Structures are given as C-alpha cells and as structure tokens.
Amino acid sequence: MNKTLMGMMAILPFLAGTALAGQPLTDTQMDKVTAGHVFSTVETTNQTFVMIDIDQPFATTLPSGPTGSVSKLVGAVTLPAANMQIAWGIFAAPPPAP
Image (spheres, rainbow, N blue to C red):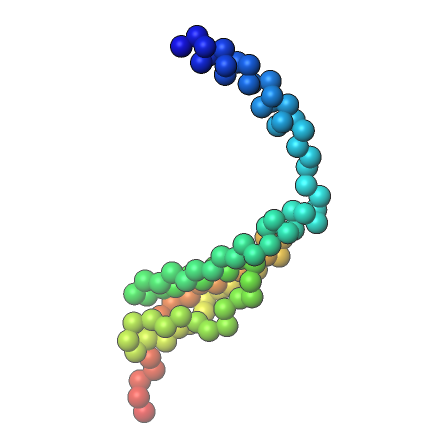
C-alpha cells in the first residue's frame, strides 16, 4: 500500500508539468476543431411542430402532419451569433373540398 501511494506521489509532478505545457489554440485551429458539428431536429405532435437547425441551411420544406393536415408556419427566429434557426408551427385541417 505504501509503495503504491509513494509511486503515485512521485508521478504527480510530471502530470502537472505536462498539463501546464499545453498551449491555447488559435482561432483558426478552433474553427477546424468545431467545424462539422451540425445539429438538426424536427419535433412533432398531433397539432404542432418545431424545427431547429444549427450550423447548416434551414430546412425549406415543412414537416408533414397527421393524415390530411397541412403545415402552417407560425413563427421563425434566426440567431446569427449562434448560427441557429428555429421555426414553429401548427398542423391545420385541410381546406374543405369545393
């Protein structure tokens, strides 16, 4: 037990020295690290939908709802600083047949 504890204590300064030797990444390096992180989701219920897109173009087609319903966009928000788009809407009953 004592040998194990002493061994761990002896290694500790080397681990701390390695952690301090790291250099911060430049903006260009950070762009390469975070590039490609894309998120897109469409959540629906029987009456509503929410679409969220991060780091990609916004979906141009609205989701389809229950049989016979029509998607109606209620609102949308774009957050340029976060490169995020959010849209929400409802599924309305189709117009009556003539």
